[in-house]
Amino acid sequence: MGKLNQICSTVQKSRRVKPDGTSELSFEVRGVDDETSQLVLTRRGTSNDDASGFGAGWHAHLENLLQVLMGADTSSAILDVRYEELRPSHVALMDSIQNAFGERTQ
Image (cartoon, rainbow, N blue to C red; front, side, top):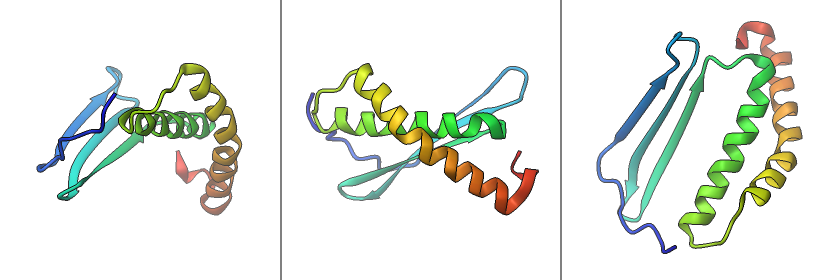
């Protein structure tokens, strides 16, 4: 797979809300300069208990996407290993957020 050749010149947005309204996932892609686009992923409505898993999962998936865009080979096994590597740091991050802000993070 080759390099991504098209740079996003306008902001592109997509938003998905669960039918019951309990969570939301949105993507925003915008051009940074003539050679760079930025992807912003926002997940809302995730419980404190699930947040670290979602964080590690999206982190691993976005790293995997970068590898694909750069033309590298990847697999679900590589993705799974990376998720397991990232999960402890996301658990620690969520713990520090909860300690700093209490249960208001829900």
